[in-house]
Image (cartoon, one colour):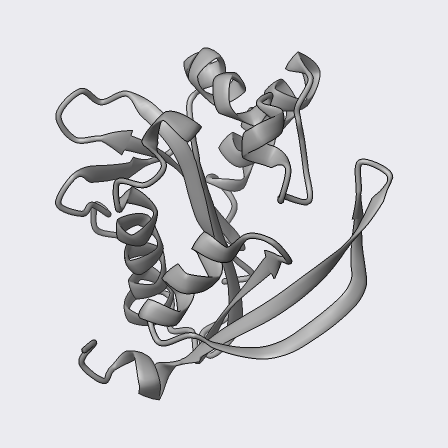
Length: 182
């Protein structure tokens, strides 16, 4: 697999020594408020790192979870990945998370576009799906800019932190992805 990068981001495999950077965003209640996980305890962050490091060695690889780093500094500012990639033609799920210090700078859009491209161009997906908690309007708008279409809305679909959340499902098929963005 080629190195995955954008104009400002480089994607790499996670390492154990990423703990402090990952825990900084993964333990933040504001960052995780519209996620199905978190805020993480230190043990949960360690478990996340152990899982992603182990998954990177699987053959065939099912999940691709990357540390999102800034090209200029190499600092970890978030994570992103595609999931369910063991067979070509699959429908992949993708997601990303950024430290709140990097919100509103277009980095989420760069990360999302690169992950979608990975799913279609390198992993042979026929469809890429994202699940967005109700209230996460920025992510919904970002997906729509990438030509994702909201195909489903489920009330009280996911329970996280003892609260049930409404979730929208957004989908993008390979044919639409191959059309130029306008």
